[in-house]
Amino acid sequence: MNTQRRKVSLISPFYNEGKGVQAFFERVGELAAQLQPRYDFEVIAINDGSRDDTYAQLVQAQRVHPYLTIIDLSRNFGKEAAISAGLDYATGDAVVPIDADLQHPPEVVAQLIEKWEEGAEVVLAKRIDRETDRPIQKFTANGFYRLHNAISDIRIPPDVGDFRLMDRKVVQALKTLPESRRFMKGLFAWVGFHSVTVEYQVAPREHGTTSFNTWKLWNFAIEGITSYSSAPLRVWTYLGCAVSSIAFIYAVYLLIKTLCFGADTPGYASLMITILFASGVQLIGIGVLGEYVGRIFAESKRRPVYIVRDVVTPDP
Ligand code: UDP
Ligand code: MG
Image (cartoon, rainbow, N blue to C red; front, side, top):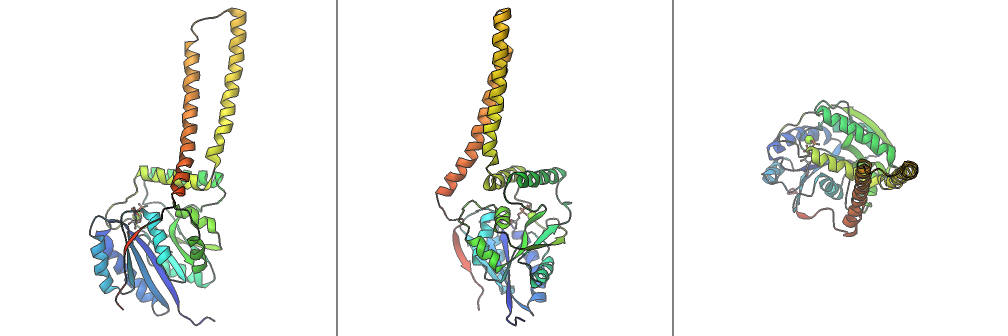
C-alpha cells in the first residue's frame, strides 16, 4: 500500500472567460474540499492572451484559492498551445485538462480519480450526448471521427475531448513529442497507454460565448487529419491516373470518330468540360500539397509552442 500522498493537477485554459472565473472556482473549490483530505491538489490556469479582465479575475481568485497557479501567456496561442503549457507546468501525479466554461463538470474529476486509483493510466471522460451542439455540429463531428479514423494510423475515440485524467507517465510521454503544431486529441491517442472510460453529460456553457466558430472547427479538422495521415496526399496519384485514363479513352474515341465521319467543329462543349475538369482536379491536388507543405514550413521553424509572460504562484 502506497502511503505517500499523491497530487492531482487540473489544467484549465482561459480565453476571454472573465465572467466565468468566479463560477468556475466556486465549483472547483467544492472539488478541492472533497479531494484535499486525501490528495495534494493544484489548479494551473493558463490565461491564453485574454482581452477581457480574465487575468485580474484569476489573480483575485488566487487569494481565495491558494492551490491556484496562473500561467500568463504573452498572447493568444490557441487552446492546444495553452494545454501544452499546462502540461509543462503541472506537477501532479495525475493531470486533468478541463475547460474553464464549466462544460466539463468538475465533479466528474472525482470519478476519474477513482478509476485512476484502480490502476488506469488514462481515464477518458466520454460525453454521453451532444445535446449542447447544433445538429450540423453533431453531423460534422461524427463525419470527422469516421474519416479520421479510417485513414489515419491512430484512432481517436469519438465523443472524447481533452477532458481526461492522465497519469504522470502519460504526461511525461506527451512532453517528449517535439511538434509545434499540436492537435492534442491526436497526440493523446498517439502516446497510447491503457485507458478506461467514464461517461458524463456535457453542460451548456455558463458564461460568455464559444471561441470556436464553424470556420475554426473546419481548420481544426484539417489540422487533425493532415497531422496523422498522408492519405490525402497519396490519393491524388490514383485520381490523376483515373482521370488521365478516361481522357485517353475519350481521345481514342474522338480520333476514330473524326477519321470515320470527318471533323465537326462543335467539339467546343467537350473541350471545355475536359479543360475545366482537369484544371479543377489539379487545383485541388495542389491545395492538398499546400496543406502538407504548410505543415513542413511551420515545423521547420522550430518555434516554441507558446511564450510565457508571467508565472504567478500563490503566496506560501
Ligand atoms: N480557449 C483557449 N484559447 C482559445 C480558445 C479557447 O484557451 O484560443 C479555452 C476556453 O477558454 C475554454 C476552452 O478553451 O476554456 C474551450 O473553449 P470553448 O468553450 O470556446 O470551445 P467549445 O466548448 O465550444 O468547443
Ligand atoms: Mg466550451
